[in-house]
Image 1 (tube, rainbow, N blue to C red):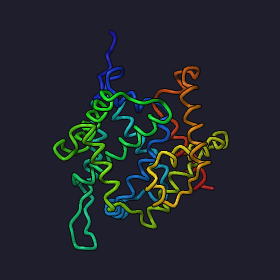
Image 2 (image 1 turned 180 degrees about the horizontal axis):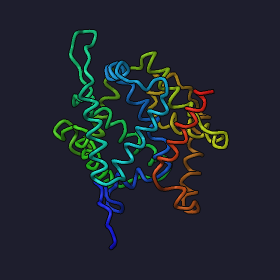
Image 3 (image 1 turned 120 degrees about the horizontal axis):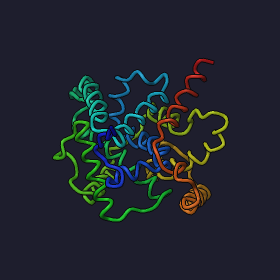
Image 4 (image 1 turned 90 degrees about the horizontal axis):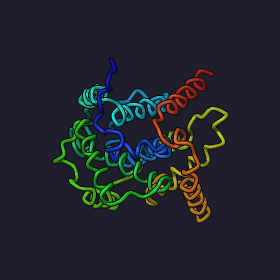
Length: 278
C-alpha cells in the first residue's frame, strides 16, 4: 500500500513562500542578514541576550534555527506544529524588566512582528538579488504566507500589516524611525555570526562572496550601524555577483540551486564544534 505523506502548510508548487525559501541562494544567506536586522531592535536584543544559552556556540544555535524554519516551510503540518509549539513555550518563559521598569516579554506582538519582518525582508532581498524579482501578486501571496508563519509562532494577524504594500510601508517607517540602534554587544556578536561562518577548508574560498552578499543587501543605514565598510568597488562587486548568479541559473543543476539547506547548516555547526574542541 502506497503511503501518502501529509502535506505541509506551504505546499510545493503552490506556495510562494516555499518557492522563495527553496532557492539555495536564499537559504544559505537570509539567516545571517536577518540576524543583523533583528539585532537593531535594542530592547529585543538586550532581553533575548540575557535569556539565551547559545552564545558559547552561536553557529550551533543559528543552525538549529535554520533547520527549525525549514521544517516549518517544507515539513508536514504535524512537524511544523511540533516545532512552533516548542518555540512558543520557550518564548513564553522569557520575561524581563527594562531600565525604565517596563515589563517585557519575548512573545509580545511587536517583538514577534519585528523578528518575522526581518526574516521575510531578508528572504526577499536575497531572492531579488540572486534569483529574480517576484510579481506584485507573488509578493502579496508571499506576505500572506508569512502571516501564516507568524500565526504558527503566536503572532495574531491583527498585530501585523494586512498586505504586502502595508508591510513595505511599515518596514520602511521602522527603518526611518530613529528607534533602531546597534549596541556594542550586538555589533560584536552580529558581525561575528554573520561574517565569520566556520566553513570547512573546501568551502572556505566561498566566504568572501557570501559575506559580500550579506553586507551588500543590507539597507545602507544598517551597514553604517554595524560599521561595515562599503564603497563603489563593493557595490560593483555585488552587482557582478548578482548578475553571475542570475545568468548561471539555467545551466546549474536543479539539485544545486534548489532544495533545503539543513545539511549545510549542520556542516557549519560541526565545524564550529571541532574548532571549539581544538
